[in-house]
Length: 316
Image (cartoon, rainbow, N blue to C red; front, side, top):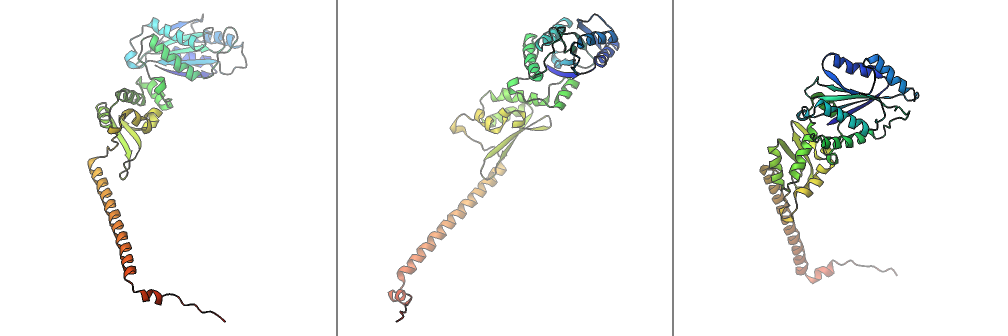
């Protein structure tokens, strides 16, 4: 489940937006603690309580709760309403005005909640860390209502704006989170590198390794899923190469990092052999030159050494 929170200044516009859906037969009102049913009267009710905090500019709280497509028919209208009320209480709106709408204008059913951040008591519902609080609350509600767990929070990177908007538009789980769940599943099997790559291919994931042809050193790992490449660390820090290799390779005897194609491996081997031959030739050459120099010195006549000694003149 995904939540999208918006704080605004005008109750009338957000109420009118949802009421238009109701009038078109694309939404229904699940629950409300307001006395009125028309947009104008509802707006007045909200604003009467809002005047308890006249300096608060953004008193409007508008949130949508979106279920994955496979969960769309799991909840009855009554359970949807209970889910919305639990969310409101969990976010601090227990003593606030609200209207709950159920929309079914898309492939997946979802609910919209319009609430007043100013409580009947005159206190204001805090918006401090509301994103993190909402994510933690949603995970609990998924378990309570037996819904598909959207993402494991400890493995999740924050979704981008584009990913959230696409999810809200289509009802599909973002591809990056699908890939994340695939990696979690396979990494928990304690596989060797080759088996790790083979199992990912069966899931539609291709692996790209950044490996040096000369040294074999691996500097990074990337994954292709549904036509898009993701760096391991961009999926989550746990999927960087330094973290993945710890989970894949657990035995020193099985530390085979070489996953370069055979042709490249042959080139690397040839380069290694050439470099080795050059070093050997160089060593032989230095040894030969040193031995030749010593032989020449030993065979040199004694008088030649004396002859070549410098002469000194003394001044009187």
